[in-house]
Amino acid sequence: DPEDSRVGIQLARELESLGRKDEHLEHLRSLHEACPHVVAVANELAMAYDDRREFAAAEKVYRASLARFPEAPTVHGCYADSLWKSSRKEEALEQVALACEISSTYLWAWRAQVYWLASLDREEEALEVARRLVQLQPTEPGSYDLLASACRSNYLDAEGQQALERAVALAPNSLEYVSTLAGWHRRHGRNEEAKVVLQEGRGRMGNHPTLAVAEAEILRGEGQFKDARELLREALEAFPDHVHSWETYANWLLNDRRADELVELAKDPPPAV
Image (cartoon, rainbow, N blue to C red; front, side, top):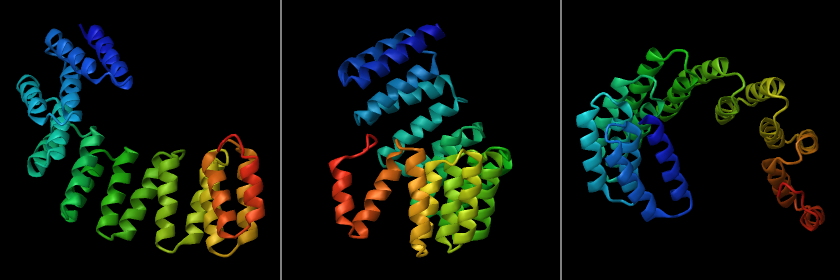
Protein backbone atom coordinates (compact mmCIF):
# COMPACT_ATOMS: atom_id res chain seq x y z
CA ASP A 1 0.00 0.00 0.00
CA PRO A 2 1.56 3.34 -1.04
CA GLU A 3 0.19 5.11 2.03
CA ASP A 4 1.62 2.42 4.33
CA SER A 5 5.01 2.77 2.65
CA ARG A 6 4.97 6.55 3.11
CA VAL A 7 4.14 6.20 6.78
CA GLY A 8 6.80 3.53 7.14
CA ILE A 9 9.46 5.72 5.53
CA GLN A 10 8.52 8.61 7.81
CA LEU A 11 8.87 6.36 10.86
CA ALA A 12 12.27 5.18 9.61
CA ARG A 13 13.45 8.76 9.30
CA GLU A 14 12.22 9.53 12.80
CA LEU A 15 14.22 6.58 14.15
CA GLU A 16 17.29 7.77 12.28
CA SER A 17 16.92 11.32 13.60
CA LEU A 18 16.82 9.92 17.14
CA GLY A 19 20.09 8.08 16.53
CA ARG A 20 18.44 4.65 16.74
CA LYS A 21 20.45 3.32 13.83
CA ASP A 22 19.92 -0.40 14.32
CA GLU A 23 16.17 -0.02 14.74
CA HIS A 24 16.15 2.24 11.69
CA LEU A 25 17.78 -0.46 9.56
CA GLU A 26 15.63 -3.29 10.90
CA HIS A 27 12.47 -1.28 10.30
CA LEU A 28 13.49 -0.61 6.69
CA ARG A 29 14.29 -4.28 6.13
CA SER A 30 10.82 -5.24 7.33
CA LEU A 31 9.20 -2.48 5.30
CA HIS A 32 11.04 -3.59 2.17
CA GLU A 33 9.85 -7.17 2.68
CA ALA A 34 6.28 -5.89 3.01
CA CYS A 35 6.54 -3.41 0.10
CA PRO A 36 9.04 -4.93 -2.34
CA HIS A 37 7.61 -3.06 -5.31
CA VAL A 38 7.87 0.46 -3.88
CA VAL A 39 10.91 2.25 -5.30
CA ALA A 40 11.21 4.75 -2.44
CA VAL A 41 11.38 1.97 0.16
CA ALA A 42 14.11 0.14 -1.70
CA ASN A 43 16.10 3.35 -2.06
CA GLU A 44 15.73 4.14 1.65
CA LEU A 45 16.99 0.69 2.62
CA ALA A 46 19.92 0.79 0.25
CA MET A 47 20.90 4.30 1.40
CA ALA A 48 20.76 3.10 5.00
CA TYR A 49 23.34 0.47 4.08
CA ASP A 50 25.37 3.15 2.31
CA ASP A 51 25.38 5.30 5.44
CA ARG A 52 26.80 2.32 7.34
CA ARG A 53 29.35 1.82 4.55
CA GLU A 54 27.91 -1.62 3.91
CA PHE A 55 28.23 -1.12 0.17
CA ALA A 56 27.86 -4.79 -0.81
CA ALA A 57 24.50 -5.01 0.96
CA ALA A 58 23.43 -1.73 -0.63
CA GLU A 59 24.44 -2.95 -4.08
CA LYS A 60 22.35 -6.08 -3.66
CA VAL A 61 19.28 -3.95 -2.98
CA TYR A 62 20.02 -1.57 -5.86
CA ARG A 63 20.50 -4.40 -8.36
CA ALA A 64 17.26 -6.06 -7.30
CA SER A 65 15.50 -2.71 -7.68
CA LEU A 66 16.94 -2.17 -11.14
CA ALA A 67 15.69 -5.62 -12.17
CA ARG A 68 12.19 -4.56 -11.09
CA PHE A 69 12.36 -0.89 -12.10
CA PRO A 70 14.87 -0.49 -14.94
CA GLU A 71 13.41 2.89 -15.91
CA ALA A 72 13.35 4.40 -12.41
CA PRO A 73 15.82 7.30 -12.52
CA THR A 74 16.18 7.59 -8.75
CA VAL A 75 17.34 3.98 -8.46
CA HIS A 76 20.07 4.63 -11.02
CA GLY A 77 20.93 7.89 -9.25
CA CYS A 78 21.11 6.43 -5.74
CA TYR A 79 23.09 3.45 -7.02
CA ALA A 80 25.47 5.85 -8.76
CA ASP A 81 25.96 7.76 -5.51
CA SER A 82 26.73 4.52 -3.69
CA LEU A 83 29.26 3.52 -6.34
CA TRP A 84 30.90 6.94 -6.15
CA LYS A 85 31.18 6.75 -2.37
CA SER A 86 32.81 3.33 -2.66
CA SER A 87 35.37 4.75 -5.17
CA ARG A 88 33.95 2.91 -8.18
CA LYS A 89 33.92 6.15 -10.09
CA GLU A 90 33.62 5.01 -13.70
CA GLU A 91 30.71 2.73 -12.81
CA ALA A 92 29.13 5.62 -10.92
CA LEU A 93 29.38 7.83 -13.99
CA GLU A 94 27.76 5.15 -16.13
CA GLN A 95 24.84 4.84 -13.72
CA VAL A 96 24.29 8.56 -13.30
CA ALA A 97 24.39 9.01 -17.08
CA LEU A 98 21.60 6.43 -17.35
CA ALA A 99 19.57 8.37 -14.78
CA CYS A 100 20.01 11.52 -16.87
CA GLU A 101 19.00 9.74 -20.06
CA ILE A 102 15.82 8.51 -18.41
CA SER A 103 14.85 11.86 -16.88
CA SER A 104 15.75 15.39 -17.92
CA THR A 105 14.05 16.71 -14.77
CA TYR A 106 16.14 14.71 -12.27
CA LEU A 107 18.38 17.67 -11.52
CA TRP A 108 20.36 15.92 -8.78
CA ALA A 109 21.65 13.38 -11.31
CA TRP A 110 22.65 16.06 -13.80
CA ARG A 111 24.47 18.00 -11.09
CA ALA A 112 26.24 14.87 -9.89
CA GLN A 113 27.37 14.00 -13.41
CA VAL A 114 28.77 17.50 -14.00
CA TYR A 115 30.48 17.76 -10.61
CA TRP A 116 31.93 14.26 -10.74
CA LEU A 117 33.33 14.75 -14.23
CA ALA A 118 34.88 18.06 -13.19
CA SER A 119 36.42 16.45 -10.10
CA LEU A 120 38.14 13.96 -12.42
CA ASP A 121 39.56 16.84 -14.52
CA ARG A 122 37.13 16.10 -17.34
CA GLU A 123 35.85 19.66 -17.47
CA GLU A 124 35.02 19.68 -21.17
CA GLU A 125 32.79 16.62 -20.79
CA ALA A 126 31.12 18.27 -17.80
CA LEU A 127 30.46 21.36 -19.89
CA GLU A 128 28.82 19.34 -22.65
CA VAL A 129 26.54 17.64 -20.13
CA ALA A 130 25.49 20.99 -18.70
CA ARG A 131 24.85 22.44 -22.15
CA ARG A 132 22.75 19.41 -22.99
CA LEU A 133 20.59 19.95 -19.91
CA VAL A 134 19.92 23.56 -20.94
CA GLN A 135 18.73 22.29 -24.30
CA LEU A 136 16.39 19.80 -22.62
CA GLN A 137 15.21 22.10 -19.83
CA PRO A 138 15.36 25.67 -21.21
CA THR A 139 12.92 27.03 -18.62
CA GLU A 140 14.52 25.44 -15.55
CA PRO A 141 16.72 28.00 -13.74
CA GLY A 142 18.75 25.25 -12.09
CA SER A 143 19.99 24.09 -15.49
CA TYR A 144 21.54 27.50 -16.15
CA ASP A 145 23.08 27.60 -12.68
CA LEU A 146 24.69 24.23 -13.42
CA LEU A 147 25.92 25.49 -16.79
CA ALA A 148 27.52 28.48 -15.06
CA SER A 149 29.33 26.13 -12.71
CA ALA A 150 30.68 24.15 -15.65
CA CYS A 151 31.67 27.37 -17.42
CA ARG A 152 33.61 28.48 -14.37
CA SER A 153 35.68 25.28 -14.47
CA ASN A 154 36.36 25.95 -18.17
CA TYR A 155 37.13 29.68 -17.68
CA LEU A 156 34.23 30.72 -19.91
CA ASP A 157 33.31 34.06 -18.34
CA ALA A 158 30.83 35.35 -20.93
CA GLU A 159 28.86 32.11 -21.28
CA GLY A 160 28.77 31.65 -17.51
CA GLN A 161 27.53 35.20 -16.96
CA GLN A 162 24.81 34.77 -19.57
CA ALA A 163 23.73 31.50 -17.95
CA LEU A 164 23.40 33.12 -14.52
CA GLU A 165 21.55 36.09 -15.96
CA ARG A 166 19.09 33.64 -17.50
CA ALA A 167 18.71 31.83 -14.15
CA VAL A 168 17.91 35.13 -12.44
CA ALA A 169 15.46 36.07 -15.20
CA LEU A 170 13.63 32.77 -14.68
CA ALA A 171 13.74 32.97 -10.86
CA PRO A 172 14.12 36.67 -10.02
CA ASN A 173 13.45 36.15 -6.30
CA SER A 174 16.01 33.40 -5.86
CA LEU A 175 18.54 34.52 -3.26
CA GLU A 176 20.92 31.82 -4.46
CA TYR A 177 20.96 32.84 -8.11
CA VAL A 178 21.12 36.58 -7.42
CA SER A 179 24.00 36.08 -4.98
CA THR A 180 25.81 33.79 -7.41
CA LEU A 181 25.50 36.26 -10.28
CA ALA A 182 26.74 39.13 -8.10
CA GLY A 183 29.63 36.98 -6.91
CA TRP A 184 30.47 36.08 -10.51
CA HIS A 185 30.75 39.75 -11.45
CA ARG A 186 32.82 40.48 -8.37
CA ARG A 187 35.29 37.66 -9.06
CA HIS A 188 35.84 39.12 -12.51
CA GLY A 189 36.44 42.64 -11.20
CA ARG A 190 33.04 44.02 -12.18
CA ASN A 191 32.02 45.61 -8.89
CA GLU A 192 29.58 48.07 -10.40
CA GLU A 193 27.71 45.31 -12.19
CA ALA A 194 27.69 43.26 -8.99
CA LYS A 195 26.21 46.15 -7.02
CA VAL A 196 23.48 46.66 -9.62
CA VAL A 197 22.53 42.97 -9.39
CA LEU A 198 22.40 43.16 -5.59
CA GLN A 199 20.43 46.41 -5.56
CA GLU A 200 17.90 45.09 -8.04
CA GLY A 201 17.60 41.90 -6.00
CA ARG A 202 17.02 43.89 -2.81
CA GLY A 203 14.32 45.85 -4.58
CA ARG A 204 12.51 42.65 -5.52
CA MET A 205 13.08 40.78 -2.26
CA GLY A 206 12.33 43.41 0.34
CA ASN A 207 15.88 44.61 0.96
CA HIS A 208 17.10 41.12 1.88
CA PRO A 209 19.91 41.38 4.45
CA THR A 210 22.15 38.82 2.76
CA LEU A 211 22.20 40.96 -0.38
CA ALA A 212 22.72 44.14 1.65
CA VAL A 213 25.71 42.60 3.44
CA ALA A 214 27.18 41.46 0.11
CA GLU A 215 26.91 45.00 -1.27
CA ALA A 216 28.38 46.43 1.93
CA GLU A 217 31.37 44.09 1.56
CA ILE A 218 31.94 45.40 -1.96
CA LEU A 219 31.78 49.01 -0.77
CA ARG A 220 34.22 48.26 2.03
CA GLY A 221 36.58 46.58 -0.43
CA GLU A 222 36.48 49.74 -2.53
CA GLY A 223 37.41 51.88 0.47
CA GLN A 224 33.93 53.37 0.83
CA PHE A 225 33.91 52.64 4.55
CA LYS A 226 31.23 55.14 5.56
CA ASP A 227 28.76 53.91 2.96
CA ALA A 228 29.54 50.29 3.82
CA ARG A 229 28.93 50.87 7.54
CA GLU A 230 25.69 52.72 6.84
CA LEU A 231 24.37 49.94 4.64
CA LEU A 232 25.31 47.29 7.20
CA ARG A 233 23.72 49.34 9.99
CA GLU A 234 20.49 49.56 8.01
CA ALA A 235 20.50 45.79 7.58
CA LEU A 236 21.07 45.25 11.31
CA GLU A 237 18.24 47.62 12.23
CA ALA A 238 15.79 46.17 9.73
CA PHE A 239 16.72 42.52 10.36
CA PRO A 240 18.06 42.21 13.94
CA ASP A 241 17.76 38.42 13.83
CA HIS A 242 20.01 38.00 10.79
CA VAL A 243 23.07 36.17 12.11
CA HIS A 244 25.35 36.79 9.11
CA SER A 245 24.90 40.56 9.42
CA TRP A 246 26.06 40.50 13.04
CA GLU A 247 28.98 38.21 12.19
CA THR A 248 30.04 40.63 9.48
CA TYR A 249 29.74 43.57 11.88
CA ALA A 250 31.87 41.79 14.50
CA ASN A 251 34.51 40.89 11.92
CA TRP A 252 34.70 44.49 10.76
CA LEU A 253 35.18 45.68 14.35
CA LEU A 254 37.94 43.11 14.81
CA ASN A 255 39.71 43.96 11.56
CA ASP A 256 39.46 47.70 12.25
CA ARG A 257 40.88 47.19 15.76
CA ARG A 258 37.81 48.80 17.32
CA ALA A 259 38.30 46.82 20.50
CA ASP A 260 36.07 48.92 22.75
CA GLU A 261 33.06 48.49 20.49
CA LEU A 262 33.78 44.77 20.14
CA VAL A 263 33.91 44.40 23.94
CA GLU A 264 30.60 46.22 24.28
CA LEU A 265 29.04 43.93 21.70
CA ALA A 266 30.34 40.90 23.60
CA LYS A 267 28.94 42.21 26.89
CA ASP A 268 25.45 42.59 25.50
CA PRO A 269 25.23 40.35 22.41
CA PRO A 270 22.10 40.54 20.28
CA PRO A 271 19.72 37.57 20.50
CA ALA A 272 20.69 36.48 16.99
CA VAL A 273 24.21 35.55 18.17
